[in-house]
Image (cartoon, rainbow, N blue to C red; front, side, top):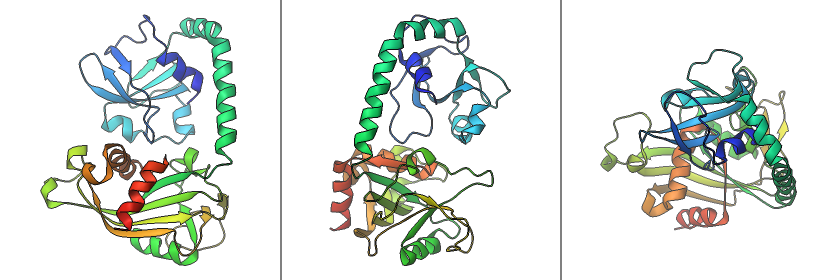
Length: 289
C-alpha cells in the first residue's frame, strides 16, 4: 500500500468516494491486521476490512490474501481499476486525489522524513516479534527440528510469496521472536469449528518460546533442514531459548484485551507482529509461573 493513498482516505472530506454502500469512516489500522484498513465502519453499522492499491493488479503482485476480504465482505480501494476482481472495487476520483496531493505536499514530505528518522532509530534497537506456529501437518515436528538446529524458517508459496514478509524482513540480530504454538480450545468456549470470535477465543497454548535472533534474515535454498519444505527465508537463534512456557492460558483475563486480540488474528493470518515491552512482560510472566 502506498502511504499517500492511505492518507487521502483518512483526510476528513465531504467528497463521495464511491457510489455503493456509503463508508461512514475508516478506523485507524490496527497492528497486525491482514488488510491495510482493518475496520471500516459503514453507515449501516457493518465493520469490514479494505485493501488499498494504486491499481487492481498490484494486489496479486504484493502477495495479499484475498480470502481475508472475501470472508469479511471487504473491498479493494484503487486509484485505477485495471482488472476485474473477486470483491467490490472502489475507484477514487483522480482529480480529487490530485487536488489533495497539491494541497498536502508539504505535510506529506514532513511525515515521510519523520518516518525515515523513526525507522533509522528502530533499526538499531532490539525489537520483539510475535509469531503463531500451527500444529497442523508437520507443525509440531518442524518446531522440534528448528529448536534442535537453532534455525527458524518461514514458509513460501509456490509463487515465491512469504506471508507477512514486510514484518519478517525487519528481523535482525539481537531481536526476540516469540513463537506461540498450538492453540487448544477450552470446552467452556463451546466453539463449533472455524474461525473463533474474541469471546470464544478461550483455551491454552501448548508452548510459548522466546528466541534470541543471532543473524539477520537470510535466504538458503540448498541446505535441507525440514523434510517437507525448504522454508528458505531464515534466521538463526541462540540455543537454549531465552524462555519457554507450556500450557499457557489464553483469555482476556490472562493476556489482556490487546494481546489476546493480536494472538487471535495471528492464528488466522499467519503473519508476524511486532509487540511492545509490556506485552512481552505479560507473556514472560505467564511462562515462568
